[in-house]
Amino acid sequence: MKKLLSIFALIMVLAVSTTQVYAQDEQSTEQSAGFHQQIKQKFIDGGPTFMWPILICLILGLAISIERIITLNMATTNTKKLLANIEDALARGGIEAAKDVTKNTRGPVASIFTQGLMRSSEGIEMVEKSIVAYGGVEMARLERGLIWVSLFISLGPMLGFFGTVIGMVNAFDAIEAAGDISPQVVAGGMKTALITTVGGLIVGMILQTLYNYLVSKIDSLVNAMEDASISLVDILVKHKLSK
Image (tube, one colour):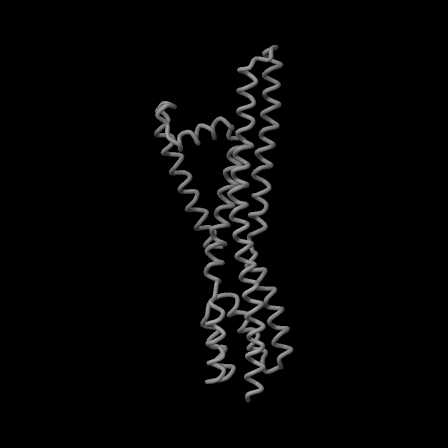
C-alpha cells in the first residue's frame, strides 16, 4: 500500500509540474506550439467536467499497474535453482535445512514451499493439501489490485462516451438557440463532444495493454508455482524413500 501511494504521489507531482509548464507557455502561438501544448489545448477543448475524471482514471490506473508490475517482477523466482537448493539442503540437514532455504528466498513459490515443508511430518498428503490451500492465498495476493485496473479500463471510455452525449446535447441546444444549422456551430459542438471520447479510448487502450501484461505475468507465475509444487512433492517422496 505504501508503495502504491508513493507511485501515485509521484505521478501527481509530475502531472502538476507539467500543468505548471503548460501555464507558462500559454502565451505561445498555436503555430509554434509543441506536442504537449496541443495536448493541453485538446484537454481544455474537451471540458474539465469530463476530461479531469478521465485523467484521474488514467493516473490511478497507471499507479496501480506500475505497483503491480514491480511487485510481480520481484515475486519471480528461479524455481529450478530453488528446487536444487532444497534438495541439497534435505540431503545435508533434513527438513529444517530445507525450510531455512525457503524462508530466505523471496517470492510466492518459496512461501508455498515453506508451508508445505512445515507439514511434512504429517505425511505427503498433508503437504499437498497445504500447498494447494496456500497456493490459493498467494494467487489472490498476486491478483490484488487488478479489479481496480479493470474498473478504470471500463470507466475511462464510458466517461468519454458520456461526455460526448452531453456535448451533442449542448450542440443541439446551440443550434436551437441560433435558429439555424450553421456549420460553424455544428462543427464546434461535435469537436468538443468527440474529444472526450478520444480521451476515454486512449485511457482504455493504455490500461488494457498493461492489464493484459499483468494477467500474462500472473499466469506464468501460477504455472511456475504449480510445476514447482509437483517437483517439491516428488523431492520429498524421494527423500523419505531414500531414508
